[in-house]
Length: 246
Image (cartoon, rainbow, N blue to C red):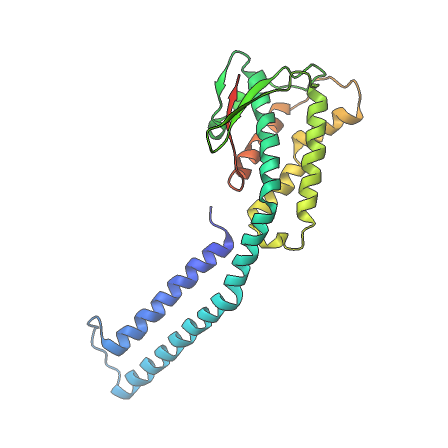
């Protein structure tokens, strides 16, 4: 999906191409036109007006690119380089959690997970969190092909998600405090805001404040799936690893 700014820039390019065509057509008669009944003086006046308007639009577009577009692009690129490591950290934490949720819904499965192809059915069995030990082993493979194995079997399920909510929320608030954060894609800002306030994290906080709460929750699996969908959208802006349940 293209952003509003990208669509505006595409429209600007099209308008400038049309203006350039008008100038070349009037000056060099590139294509034959239907004869008009207008007088010669009227034709000349219209041609001069069209050429002047076209030149004005092209010059305005040129200064827009120099004064506005290039500085905005540099600011956005600089901001993305600055927040990149934190976005990658958020993605990694959530990728591990999605992998864990998937593994418990599919207890007999061992192997790689295709995170871009998961569906609601893969999380439908989730009704609540518990105090059980995580008992989860996985591996990550980086861009260089190096595989690292991890074992978080000793962690508590509810406790692990409480820690994640605290870390992710703190990192997102830190990103939103940057003075140049508004220069990045609005889509990314929306994703981060929705992630911080998502229903799954809200349920995790219920478990945090209500010790011993263990009742099944209505639509819990739906909130888990929406949490996954937010992660999937976020991966457009961060680095992910090949993930395998071991």
